[in-house]
Figure (cartoon, rainbow, N blue to C red):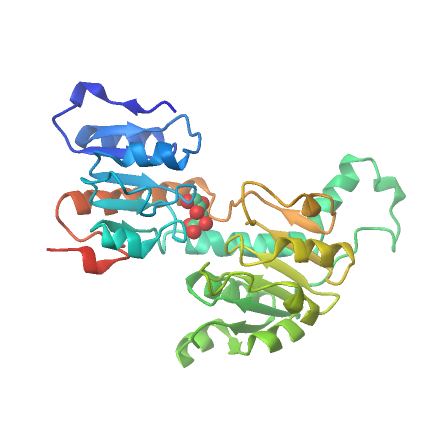
Length: 337
Ligand code: 8YV
């Protein structure tokens, strides 16, 4: 572990910790106001290193790779805020952070459209076998083509898309699907208002009906103990053999081993995965298969959006250290004006 510090300002400014590499301009700006301890080498910290790094700092910018729980906070007596550079915050033990009197924030809204775009891109790549087709070209198989001998895919247009998790990103995917003439069904913990259902052209159905009828199932729900293995062997068994499954939600929402077995036996057509159980590790059974498109958790990864996420996380951190309410505070009960 090598933590870099802007030592010329040591002692004069509040100390903050930046857990992963961020854009240099953003770091330089932070250094004008704070004594910045940062991990620009970008190696993921062990829990012990993280605990040490949080000791003595007033604020921390973290990402999904840092688990913030009571152990991480054990020596963080000066900490006022942990600002996640991520909308999902299943890396936070929110009750433990709240019990420690620390504010927790995330980065909603700024990544909605970028992530919805990627969900749709991954769905298209999966249904139309784009990565397999690229391998055809690279492996010199193009001259073997015929009307029937090609990576033949499944249509999106005029098919039924089933979205599980109809928050901002799920709704963004639904609106994109309308442009493809798709029939949109969804399942969510709570039903949308009539106005929101209308603007997404989406009909609410049970999870079982969605799995039975959708041609394409897209997962966009937050991870929690309740959503663990929302899709396992039992749920996959309900799906059509021609169906595709796309997970841009979180690893652990899908039982990856059960999915690999189903894909191997062609019990469903294909899957597109941006998130994995235990990532950055990927279940080796998935790696053996050609009917799965794999991406390294990049749904929010455009330069513009990643900059906006960093900027919002910094705005949260600055507000907290200025005694103001962070714009996207999760545990509002901790804030004392
Ligand atoms: C992040 C994400 O890239 O915002 C989220 O919930 O999954 C991604 O945008 C990732 O979590 C890194 O923090």
